[in-house]
Image (cartoon, rainbow, N blue to C red):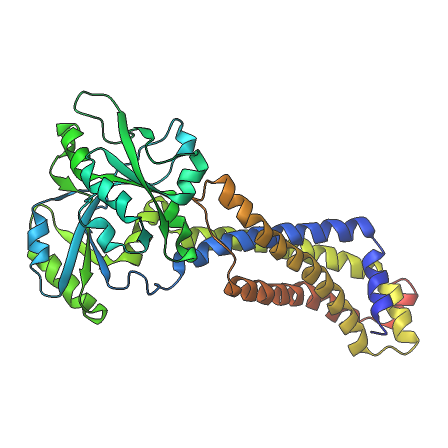
Length: 388
């Protein structure tokens, strides 16, 4: 603590430079915090919810449909307890900016497959009895002010109707919640009946097909065996399948836009490389300007180790103050991002992001502080005071 005044004086010697450098560090770590939250969300291990579910989709592409006739054949595989199916719809409500996930599902079996979706019994019955019926999550209903009994028009972006129009209308018969707050993202989607969708879609879009099957197995430890048995049934057919865990299917669905982890890592690498050059240059310039001052410190008895420590402490202070401020900014901003994206980017900073961020702060502080610190250690008192 006795060297704190010297550290503060060094940082305030060029106030504008210190402030701009610290703001750069803050911006870099704010971006890191938000991007790493996305990376962690995509790479998180599978939760216990859905651990006994497999997804059967086309081997070639998740946008390639599968025949409805596969239902009984999959159901006959040893180890399969239950099965349902669904189809991505991709409709938009009023405006393309109002996009939210919407699926055509088998009303009789889908909710039983996903018990984490909690729908009151009366509304579940209404869903089964209403051919044009649809259910939405609580968060989505609150966003648009929907209530049971409303009619919801969606504009198709993929599947036109038989009459050539893109307008589909659904009757809202239920609003579901989730059994676990961690699954609140599931409350921002809409489910409607597959039979109504299949009957109404343009014949060019393969009626009698589904997007994927969801399968519950009797023992999660037998997942590989069951998946292999399912895929072998359809090997060398026109519609071969790829069976995988629910988590892997969700990842492959998201990776249609690319490898999310690789993209995020690449962006963060570029940001930190730039930060390293910028803060390293600022520290080197600061030490060059203070060579006579450091020589005076050595003259009055400061050891080489003490001088090195002061320089490292200066770089550490810049990185710690700016880095922690940036991480805190990212943590506080992510809820606003979730609200602005209508819940589509519902991610939070996990402890591993904080741990990685603190490690990066330490490593970058060491990388930018060590070269000027060693230069300060090698200062010759006579040459420095003589202005050489």
